[in-house]
Image (cartoon, rainbow, N blue to C red):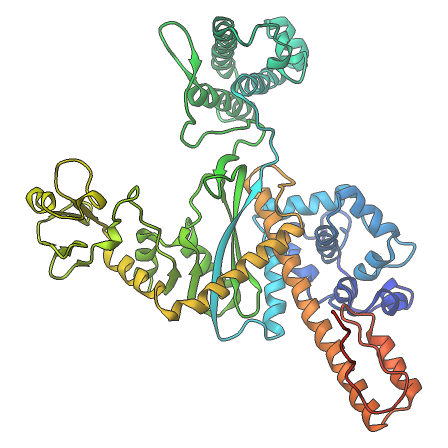
Amino acid sequence: MLGERGPQRGLFEADTLYLDFVGPNSFHGFLASQRGQLFRDEDFAGFYKEKWGRRSVPPSLLATALVLQWHDRVSDEEARQRACYDLRWKVALGIGLDERPFAKSTLQEFRAQLIVHKEQGALFRRSLDLAKQRGRLQGKLRLALDTTNILGRGAVKDTYNLLADGIVLVLRALAGQAGVTADAYAARAGYGRYRQGPSLKGQAEIDWDDAVQRQEFLAGIVADADRLLEDVRAARGHVEQDGAGDRRLADAAGLLSRVLQQDVERREDGPALRQGVARDRMPSVHDPEMRHGRKSKAKRFDGHKGQFAVDTESQVITAVAVLPGNAADREQALAVVEESEALTGCEVEETIGDAAYGDGATRRQFADAGRTLIAKAPAVTNQGRFPKTRFPIDLEAKSCTCPASQVSDDFRPAAAGGGVFRFAAAVCGACPLRSQCVRGRGGRTVQVHSQEGLLQEARAFHSSAAYRPYRTLRQVAEHRLARMAQLGLRQARYRGLAKTLFQAFMVAAVANLTLLVGADSSLAVLSAGLIVLLCSGTRLLPPSLTRSIGATHSRGHIGILAPRSAGPFKMPASRPGF
């Protein structure tokens, strides 16, 4: 049953007694002031059965605890302890000093309810509602998009140990179906070596420099995997189809089959490790949704990608998405923009991104939706020779001009759009710039993109002075990503995309709330400082009261100290060498 907090505040609650001590302009004081407004119990009523069971811990209190947990970057157990013993947490939660508000399992179950009901972004949406109430999101928005890598929680292993992990998962499923322990089932069926240590490869007594021994070791693992998959097929014939047991067997067998397919090549002389990395390779059976990804040619990672939209004026994060680690940065870009409009109620005027969003397909997608996308077009190179950008293309006249002022109208369209311009071999053969332009004996060819017109417009805009301000605006997204990395976004705390999405939403919510707190605190301190300076200069306040006001407001992030005398205000002299 839904437990609710009444609107009446108690005289002996921590926020009543110790708000000034903790600081009304601190993050904990801010959450105390938002009690009953930022998070409301009725917003989570769908998680609970009406008139069934005893009353729950008020979900508004648990939502506040989740925010505090991510702000302070603590575990579930540490969050429970702080709610019991930390004065700042008690002030933020609005509870009594001797109150122990929730158990660790209660906090975990509330988080699970958010994920199961696909409400991972519920707390994030409340941060946007608060930003709208305070006038931070209004009118038309100019969004900056960017992505960052999130390291996965699952262990990444080589093929030998990855196959062993898949075999262990199947052994557990079969053992559960047989009603015995995994160790007992493995010993009885001849798979004991997979349960003897943390690393099958590490405990193997072979000469790893010997290719024959390596091949025999791999062949034995593959044979065991094939035999286990046959055992699964037999076991599924004795369980209810599509039942819980059948799904467990199918899921475990599916993971093992995928590892075999992606990492092992079947040959006539026996199985061998597949050369190269398979497309969409799964590097961990413990978190099957992890992928190999890269942010640049040199920076690789294993995990997921977080994509975020940021309002460049207010710096408020307006939308969040989590992509597979191997997904392109531009994936779901338009969906993130549309989500920003739905959550903020504001129209997006422009969308700004880096070169990862500047491809022709993404530009066409935005253009068809009637939206403005400002992103640098991908760089074009030609191994040290004249790139395509040195050849002006007239799409209307269907002509192409080379750096030597030769014009070609030999355009051959492609079925999928675009095409290619060809210059005659005789023209290129006599050209003095041939060594800088053409390789081989033929003439130069110039590829035309299916969205060549949009790419030409983008390159012309980026080379103009009008593009310069957008470089600074795009940096807003990078700054917010850095802030979220400080709050723990870089390393996933949970396994799977759904739980990692919850983490991204929570980090974005805390980033938004701390932004709002900082803005309010700075404004309050600035206002108090102006009052102190004006009153000090005109002798409207006595010196003791002036010092009192300055000391009171120095508790914020920006301290302003009042002068000790009520004399005229003077600027301090600069220090030599400062």
